Length: 319
Image (cartoon, rainbow, N blue to C red):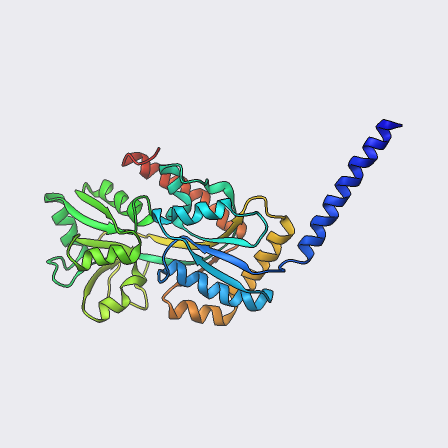
């Protein structure tokens, strides 16, 4: 009899837990949702988050706020997201290197698989630029100089996609390049403007205003074709140097978040991303629409980790 009572008690408790979970999920969202951006305000990843937050707020009928937690090439913000409750109220707008490369280099307080992908949103092709006074006027000029002398360049931080892709090019071409982290994309651009480095390699959208004002020369974009916001800039391939590289930004949520809440977030993000107003905002901000659903995004994350691990091992940065 005692055994039967014990079993009945356990079953009763499980039913309470399950029913509570269903009720909680049905009420979601009942308070503001936070999107953690692991970089400073003003970067492309921040702009993407703010576009989505504004549109999700209307779709879910609840405030969606962006919180910038910069540092460590994106690692500090993502680590904060990894410590947040798995309740669907704490999302993270992750970028390629911070999510997939940083855990291969050190122990940043999270692993790539600590998160559930919701959707990839946009891409930004990478571009190579120099200050106006630079003697370099083409990718070939940089290549020639890098084979005879050590040339310096800046990216947002060590272990970012920008750093990994340029390291891959250096290995393939036998270049002598010295990398300097910029503490973010804006910082990397500043180092080129002041002459601290010979060139900068970040998302091409960062260069638009500076190129128009004559402060920077953009020598190449790493895309299949020229980008509409820098129409006179040749691709690497046009200059005899095949290279296709971009940073992608996507939304993720903590592993352990209730599945029905995850599905509700996926639907909201999909609806928002397909909205014509969202697309117009992307275009205005020079962001390439590149939506991938959760499964396709997970596949891309997995492939990116594999590629980054290979390069990081070659340059001695893998832990």
